[in-house]
Amino acid sequence: MSAEFEYIAVDLDNDQKKLILKLASLWVRDEVTQADLNNNRKKWIRFRKYALSEVAGELAYYLNRSKNAYQSAYLDELIEHLEAYL
Image (cartoon, rainbow, N blue to C red):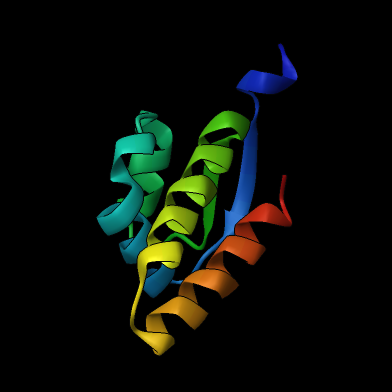
């Protein structure tokens, strides 16, 4: 199996999962990842490598346009967390 199609497990809390679903749901097309994000009891979310990169990019788009300091800091922290797995 190609490395491109393997899953990367990322630990996320429920708030982070909700934010990803709200802002970057367009890039979460994989059924496994969608199920993991919608399951409130699941901590380790499985992403495909390309999807993880696209989600981080989409969140960066919102970070660059955010006028709320708290949201900007939260998005920046989440993006750094996601990029650590790439």
